[in-house]
Length: 620
Image 1 (cartoon, rainbow, N blue to C red):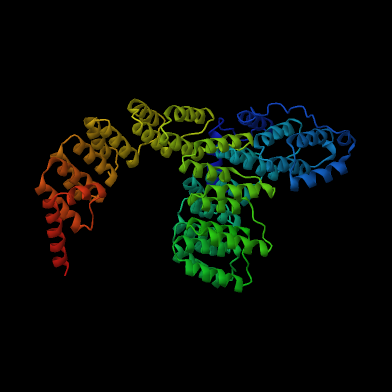
Image 2 (cartoon, helix red, strand yellow; image 1 turned 45 degrees about the horizontal axis):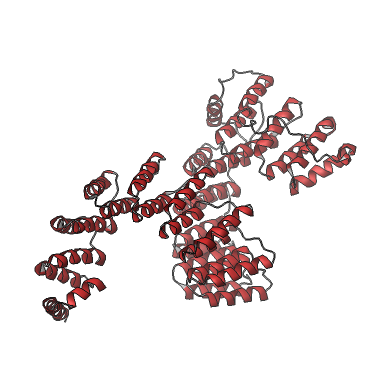
């Protein structure tokens, strides 16, 4: 690879980030010392390789040839236990003069496959101290580990050190660094690096490089730039493969841009890249979720005509799609076909079916599927349990929900923020504020971070159970943790303050929404209007009702019914008639409570008849 001026500048800057810039002619020994300073940051996890309890005598009796064979096997399969890898490493150190750098690279690769990245760094440090040779592939392994540990900056520093020591760098290493940025959710920096390297000719990107950056862009939903990059591949005599097309098509379908996905599918075929089962599954899923079930069925038929048959993922998608539409009977039929065609249902399949029954409130059937899955020898996962917990919570069966919740922990599954939030909502619905408060603190102690939905549930729960002080504490805690309230949160706060009779606090909160760069929605307006009506401030309620129109947020039937009720209670028939006319013009109807009052009074009944008659004449 060319060592361009831009590359030297970039790598020099990376080195300066950690050490003073070494002078020309700096010795390899000095660079090694500086490298040790760098890895000291991460080897805190493994400053000393622990004594291995698994140390069979057979390892000590193995010679170089046997060790080479063993490490070759393990670098493909990985180790069952970390201690096995460490035992092998110790034996390799004893035989290091008769082993090559390839053997040590294979061992590091095997340990990295276990996601023991800090251990790899620690082993590398010992390799260097022992004088075991290293090469460009060692460099690539180490950089990959730093990137997997979300330390791309360390990855660049290692690249700079190896670069100054005369080692070459290939496109795969830079692809690893690009992927490192993407793993850190910093796709913008990944794109910047990709464009800089290709512009200056530092690298010639291959399919893997393109696939990596395109995957990052699609993760952000930036399919436009992803497609542009596909177009640019010809410049480097590089042809997009089926994986690259599938990545973009799947992203387009998830964003419900199914027509664009069809366009890319046609282009794919024209480029002699044949779609596979993944391509068809993405498109069928996109069509189904867009409400185009007939098109999805035709695509499924086209797929089989091309001798491409559904796999487990395709069947799972179809089962899930039918269940979400309440078609559990059809989902069961798809499951039967799946089994007939030799595709074994997995945890995802049964969980989708459980979700279908749960959405319909048939928890007995959902639990039957759960038990059947367990009897089949399948281990329920976090989603399986969360579906049941959510279903029982909707039925306010908190005892069964909590039983499953505790069972999850017993089986080694870690409930996530969604699971906790679901349980919190159920506890508040049942008025069990203390239990909800305790569960929230348990969630925090387990290191889980509440999201804005969790805080919304807490606020709503405390307000509805008249725990205003606690609700205010939650709001302050939310802000202290750097979570910015959204319109939903403000709506809950305003409604809660109004219900508590704190109308001035509600008014101040409403005024602060615009200052925060947010726009009140119909629920936010309605909450404050309801507060004004409750305090008999009907002039202000009317004024805010008119303001809604001016702010581009027209009132809905709930808003009108609240104001109508307030004027009915006051006995202001003129205002009621005006409001009813507006409601009829908007195709809104009085709710049951207001209608009962209206038909009980002859004057109001005549008003409604006249208004309806006048509306019919106008439309005719």
